[in-house]
Length: 103
Image 1 (cartoon, rainbow, N blue to C red):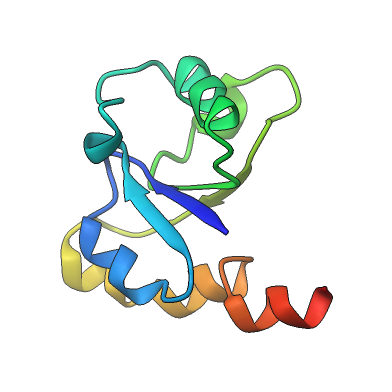
Image 2 (tube, rainbow, N blue to C red; image 1 turned 180 degrees about the horizontal axis):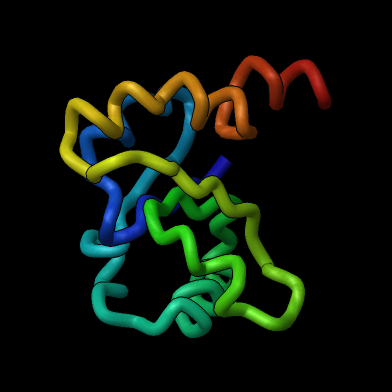
């Protein structure tokens, strides 16, 4: 599964998502794109999941989203806080074991 970590998500979370192709917005050169444009380039680049801390992203988009969203809800986006949410991210759909069992 191709997973993109939004600018608000520490890249350390990517190491917790073993078995997936994980990149950050920064590495892809997409920093500063509006949410709508980001979702469009993700779709064009065949990314399947966006992991973000932006709780408003769902409501900022009026059309059907071209990718799955995992919105991490936390008091802050520091590395220890976000790493504590890794199991929730995996169970929300970024889980290689779940994906294999569905195919």
